[in-house]
Amino acid sequence: MISSRTHPPKQEELESRLRKALARDAEKYGTKRQLSAIVATKKTKKITQRVNVPTLIIHGAEDRLIPIKFGRKNAELIEGAEFREIEGMAHDFPRPLVGYLAFVVSKHLGKSSDSE
Image 1: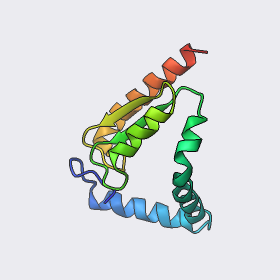
Image 2: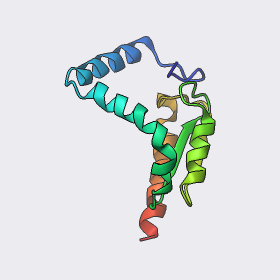
Image 3: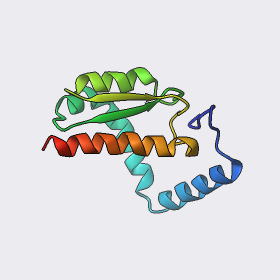
């Protein structure tokens, strides 16, 4: 559900992610943080309208967990936000796209620091 269909992860990578997720959850706070994020989505409009910093929203074109229309809507609600739809990405960060994602984020960070 989370993984990209264009760039599916290898079995070893999925197993590694699962081990890391289970280790994080063992801290007892991982699940609470995730549930808090889910509950907060009901307040997204109020929260996003208060954002007043340079904002980049990255959303995978193949995301089946959170429809892309919600990423676009958040970008509309945040004044001046930049929205980037990433082809070949779902609700994950596929290894083949990591370099491109780093470029997109660093470009945004460069713009943000230039505006100060």
